[in-house]
Amino acid sequence: TLVKIDTIYKDQSPELNIYPNPVQTVAKISVNFLKPGDRANLVLFDYFGREIFRDLFGSNPYNFSREGIPGGFYILTVSNPTGKTFATGKLVIE
Image 1 (cartoon, helix red, strand yellow):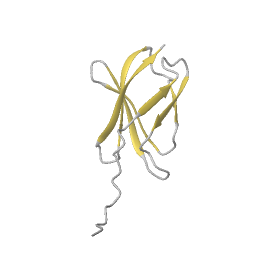
Image 2 (spheres, helix red, strand yellow; image 1 turned 135 degrees about the horizontal axis):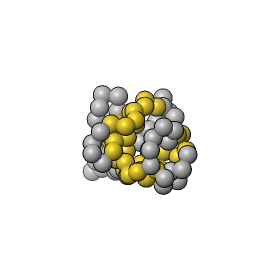
Image 3 (cartoon, rainbow, N blue to C red; image 1 turned 90 degrees about the vertical axis):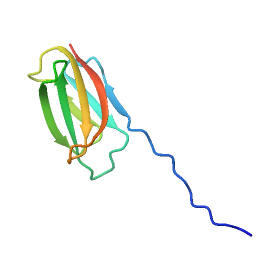
């Protein structure tokens, strides 16, 4: 007897890519889970936990400009519009 087996897809782990890192002026930030038409929040925190930058984006890759942000080490989060965080990464600004 043959039994139907549905295809099981392995969930992709959210992947965040930042290039170049460290950033001098502009960086490209891409996420593997963002589909065309999807929107996501990009939030940048300093190491004291203060929010430094926030933007809602739909392009992949996202062009991040460090204009007005001082040099240092930062934590970058990408979340859906309801606030569920998908990916985090470290960002260095020269």
